[in-house]
Length: 184
Ligand SMILES: [Zn+2]
Image (cartoon, rainbow, N blue to C red):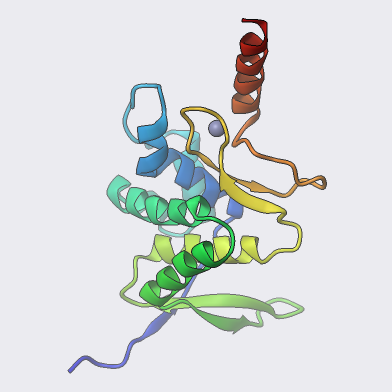
C-alpha cells in the first residue's frame, strides 16, 4: 500500500526561460539541426545563468534532468493545437500531479501551482509555466519553428499573431532561401 500523495508548491519559472530551456536542452531540436551538436550549454552560458537567477535550485540541476524535462515540454509545442495538445498536457499534468493553489502573498491573490513531491521539480515548473502561457489571452499561438532543419519552439505573443519562426535568425534564413528558389 502506498501512502497518500504529498504536494509541494511549484516556484514560478519565467516563460522566456522555459522556452529557452526547451530550445537549448531538448533532444528533438538538437536532432533536427543541421549544425553539429556541441554539447549541453556550459555552466557559464547565458542559459544556465538565467536558470540560476530565476529558479531556486536551478544551478544544481544536472543536464540530463533539464534535457528530459525539456523534451517532455517540447512535445506540448509539437502537438497539434486542439484535442491532441490537450491530451499531451493532460497526461503530463496527471504524471506530475499538478494542482492549483491559492497564493495570497501578494495583492490580489493569484493562482499558483502545487506538484507531487516525488515529481521532477523542473518538469512541474515548466509545465505550470506553459499552462499559464497557453491560457493567457495575450498568447496567440504556440508551436514549432517553420524553418527547414529547425524544431525549436515559439510562443506568439505578437499583436498580429502571425509568428511561425523561433527567431529572427530563422526568419531571415528562410527569406533568403525562398528568394534564391524564386531566382533559380
Ligand atoms: Zn527556428
